[in-house]
Structures are given as C-alpha cells and as structure tokens.
Amino acid sequence: MSSPVKKYKIHVPATTANIGPGFDVCGIALSLSLTVLVTIPTDGKGDAIPVISYTGLDSANVPLSPYKNLLTRVALYVLRSNGVDSFPPGVQIHAHNEIPFGRGLGSSGAAVISGVLLGNLLGNLNLPTSRLLDFALMVERHPDNVTAALVGGFVGSYLKELAPEDLEAATVPLAEVLPEYPPDAGPNWGEHPPKAPYGIGHYVRFGWAPEIKAIAVMPRFELATAKARGVLPNEYSRKDIVFNLQRLAVLTTALSRSPPDPELIYDAMKDKLHQPYRVPLIPGLSEILEKLTYQTYPGLLGICLSGAGPTILALATDNFDTIAKEIERIFGTHNIEVDFKTLTIDTKGSWVEEVAADATI
Ligand SMILES: Nc1ncnc2c1ncn2[C@@H]1O[C@H](COP(=O)(O)OP(=O)(O)OP(=O)(O)O)[C@@H](O)[C@H]1O
Ligand SMILES: N[C@@H](CCO)C(=O)O
Image (cartoon, rainbow, N blue to C red; front, top):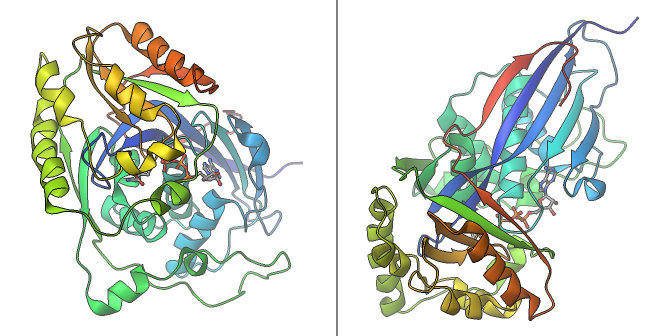
C-alpha cells in the first residue's frame, strides 16, 4: 500500500526585466508559469533523495538529479541555511514549464523562486517574503526577475548596500552557495553555505494601465544570461547614465496612466546601458528597435529587449498580431525563426496551495 501523502502546488510566473532603461531595476510578471507539484509522504517513509520529473517546454534537457537541478539545489540551499541538512524522505517533485529557457523571460528566476518556496515548504520554515527574497538574491544577484516573480506586477527593486562581512557572503561564487554535490554525497556532505544577509532586496510595485499587454517575440535560440552580461562594459559615460535615468523616472509612472501616451512611453523605453552592447548577439535587434514605431504601428507603445534577450518585448494596446508579425518578418530576414505570444501582466506573483492527494498538474 502506498504512503499517505500531502500535496502542494507552487506557481511562479515568467518575468521580463529592464523594460528598456531599467537595467537590473525593473521587472514585470507575465502570464506564463512554472508550476511545481510537490508530494510529501506524511509517514516520513521513502527514498532519501527526491524523485524529479518534468513536462512542458525545454523539459528534455533539465538535469533530474536533485543535486544538479537548479530548483532543488536552491531548495537544499534554503534548507541547509535554516538548519535542515537534507530533503525529507519520499518527496516527489513534478515541474510543468511554460517558460522557454535562456530567452529573456526569467526561466532561471522562476526556477530560483520555486526552489526557495520548495525549501520553505519542505522545511516548514514559514519564512516571510523579505527572507524568501534574500535567499533568491544570494543565487540570482540581479533583483529584477526574482522580485517580480515573487511579488507579481510591475516592480522596481534595489539591493541594499551591505556591511563588509555580509558583502563577503553575498559575493561568494554561486558554485559555493549551491555546491554541485558528488553523486555519492550523504545528507551531511560538505560545509554549510554562507549565511544570507537579512533584508538584501527592497522593492516597490508600480501601477499598470490595464489596457497594456506584452507581446513577447521569442527567437528559437538560447542566449545564456551570463553570456549577455559578459558583453557589457564595466563603466559608462555620464551622458548615457543620465539618458537612462531620465527615461526610467518617466516610464514607471507613464505605464500606470490610462489611456497610455505612446509618444511619452516610446521614447522612455529607449536604453543606452545594455541593448547597444547586445546587438551583436541578436541579429535583427537594431533594425527591430528602429523600424517599429508608435507612428507606423498604431497601438504600439514601446519596444525593447526582454531581459538579457533574445526575446523582444513590445508593449501595446492594440494590433498585437500585426506588431508581432513585423518583428517575426525582420528576424526572418536573418534566418531566425520565432514564436510569439501576447501576454497579460500577472499581478499575483508566486503562490503555494495545498491540493488533493490525487491532484495532477
Ligand atoms: N524550470 C527549471 N528547472 C531547472 N532549471 C532551469 C529551469 N528554468 C531554467 N533553468 C536553468 O536556467 C537556465 C537559463 O537561465 P538564463 O539566466 O540563462 O536564462 P533566462 O532566465 O531564461 O533568461 P533571463 O534571465 O534573461 O530572463 C537554463 O538553461 C537552465 O539551466
Ligand atoms: N537585468 C538582467 C536581466 C536578465 O534577465 C540583464 O539584463 O542582464
């Protein structure tokens, strides 16, 4: 006879980051999700390590060892940081994914947030949102995707300046925070991870005009965020920084006003801090940013790279298919195939629910 179980579903939305000038600052949660079904035996019996399975987008290439999979490594990091050395026995994890990997729609941020919520659930930790964010930020150091994924909506965030001892913990390489456990590692293997400082991330939710939708045009190739960050300079001119600051200050309020003003938003979504440097990695990007204007495509409000790319984000109130098809056409001239979707803004963020013992994804 099988063990009695408790089951939970963790829901985490996709996110787009930067929105043009808000590099590493702004994020928006979108209507695609990563859903994780967690089964926990109530009699404490079962395999010592969780059994993982995946369905949905990009699921064929995900590592299924809990010591290699990003989601479960983050969960173990949260458990170990809170005095719980190992996963409880008999846990089964099934993830269903709608967020394409490495396209600039926050797949890794969603995996990190699911992992933090999974650790919180498996350890009965009852951590408050700010502490969940601390752990997420120890893993994914830029706050834009993980904050929006956790709290939902259109969000701006910053990282607190840390005390020297905390700074040391926060700059520990990811590989040490999330050790890649050897396959034969026992539950007590290795050193404990560095402590996550308290209150690293601070955020505010902006308003959002309900008629604005997000068109995501997703090229069918992956661009690792690490590679797209690697091409950015370490220093910028005052002129370029001021260019972005001026637009960012206007954009955060302009996107909350109904009806939205295309003339104001279009220019406020321009950027000089990351997009120009990423052009060589995304054939067609400059042409797309120049060619699609609010004057030539009624309904278009603004256009930018989604996160680190290669997805293009167009904010619009109308003509969604026409706008997406023009972006598709330009990518096509560079022999790049795309998929596109018109998405709405997810205002709920991440949430966990207990479900019936016979529930499936
Ligand atoms: N659901 C998941 N489960 C396990 N690993 C995942 C999951 N989603 C993403 N990953 C890991 O994260 C990698 C993608 O991360 P990366 O930061 O490069 O892109 P992204 O998060 O999709 O884009 P961006 O950060 O620009 O929005 C994948 O190749 C995979 O290794
Ligand atoms: N702000 C980050 C987002 C990555 O998703 C970047 O542009 O590199």
